[in-house]
Length: 466
Image (cartoon, rainbow, N blue to C red):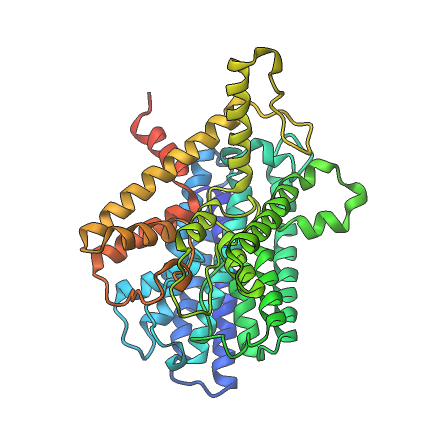
């Protein structure tokens, strides 16, 4: 691997080793000795790999888009393997595939879990699950910066004024992301403390929510969210991972910002307000419950406290598919892409039916013109999602699950969203599913984070060289 690849992976190995050490300290400080030594394996393995990468890094290797993709994909294999070690060496006698499943689910911020009763888990292991999501959310944001030329040149302009996104600019933006990520995590913690979460639960939830993760430190949160204002504040905290992570930074330095820096967030704000108004008018639910249903879906967190199956699960699944901001930890196709495609399609129809009324292909609130390469990428994203969903749903159906269950589970897997009663899958037990289904879910949880288009680019490079 190149020097860039090894430095990138080593930085996250350092973070993993740091959390391993903190878990050891936490275990001994609170006399949780049963699993204390299991974190030594992840700590030692991380340190060994860091030393190995340092000794064998290649100097002066050219950084290509293919090496960047391979680097990101390697991280989704190496780091979860290290995260799985405390599960494997814990007192719970977990199989290797279950340990990998739990670590991949955490690192991709999905939230599927093999543990049916959280209250029986050691607190240090609960903390480890949450930290795996926090690390995975940060890794996802960094990977967006690395692969931004693949995903969207136009959205890159809302991140930086530099035409060339060189290594120095990437480091600058990555440092900004890290600081914002930590500050927003602290903000969520403060909000949760305000609504009477105990310190341990508030800390774990803050690590999970900022990463759009679905791991919970307790089975039910009904007894905490027992008043409407608490549900509303909890719902609003979920929106932190829905909007761009740079929103707070741009608002703070608003005097130095052009309007295009807020384009996507303005779209998302209008989208969110419209959803709340439409749902409230047509479905008339309790406002706090309605707000939680919407925010947990659009942010791809998926956490819900009602045990009753929701009749509107199909609508909420659509919100999950749409997702949130491009520069957030949420998954989904992204509302910005969908609205841009819709505007382009309407423009094309009008240009044929009424040639004198041809619209200009520009984004609302912005002077940037959308070129055809961006439009083609957006259409390709839709096609790839349909192919991915068809594939995973078919493979899950082979294991004997109904079409409805396979489709729901396929959507939630690709969109890295935890199952709950909101989507009609609250009683689905991942511990009991067979190895084949677990392997399929593992693969597509990773695909949901890296996007299938990156893998297709690799295939084009190495299988179709000409």
